[in-house]
Length: 393
Image 1 (cartoon, rainbow, N blue to C red):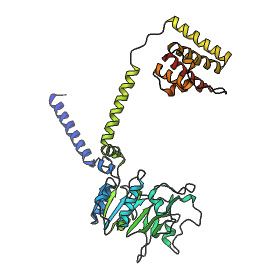
Image 2 (spheres, helix red, strand yellow):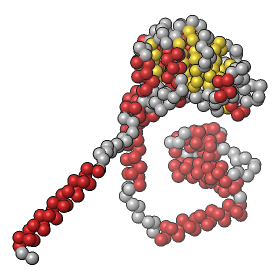
Image 3 (cartoon, helix red, strand yellow):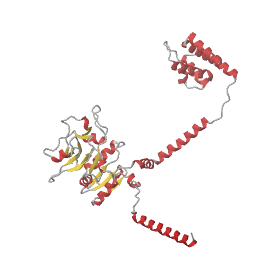
Image 4 (cartoon, rainbow, N blue to C red):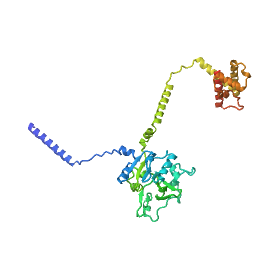
């Protein structure tokens, strides 16, 4: 094949490959690669952030608080306080402060946290106990205690697991997906409004002084992942309308940081003590090594221990203890002539002066022995007292 023919063949192949590539590329459709990064750090740390934004979009002033200190500057009239944080550390004084704020005209909304204990006669949730509201597991209720569905209500039959809130002049109820495992019971019959599923009551509302209290069985309906379901957002608006809202909650991720900041001096002191204890521990474990005792000393210690065991088995506890007391008296007579002629109390005072030990330790070692046999721990302790006194002489 000539050089010219080979060149033309190569050009034809390149042209064919170019046309084939153009055809294939024309058939391909563009696509977008979507990467899910999950919720932003702000959303992850604020489970009720969506609820805050929803209220503001409805023209309701909403703010977040970190603690009950917010009540110091919060008026009661025209205010709604939502306690959505854990209240396990709430003190009786704080409970009285919150209820007094409510009685002055505020609206308090909180979540029932503990189950009623029949044996104790309380739940341990201070707010629930003071208001006479008891929370039970729905499965533990008798048939007559369970809430009854609205008569002739097709909605109740269609959605038995949803809580229905019926309003005056409204044909259809609002639907809320409360956790049906829990049931609220108004033991003092104070509630004037409530909302039920077919198996339990999940919302109670009662007057308190000039204010209003709303109790819910669980708060999950207003968290970021659930507020857009059913009528959850509407219920938040309905309970907050005509007021400014303060939401009191905290994220688990920064709860420890806020606690340390609040108690910074105490935390600093604890840290210093931990450092000192660590240094002491390391110093003790890594201190200078003691040389092992000589063979003769080890043999002597073994001989003395064996002799003591033999005497204990042969003579008994009282004989050994009396022997130690007599040895102490002999040593005292050498250092204080006429010691044996003194009264017992005076002898103990002389021993205290000679040994520079407290009189309490002297009496502990030299007191008369009880007739009954001592326990092993008491016998060992008494021997230690006597040996300390004898060594001091």
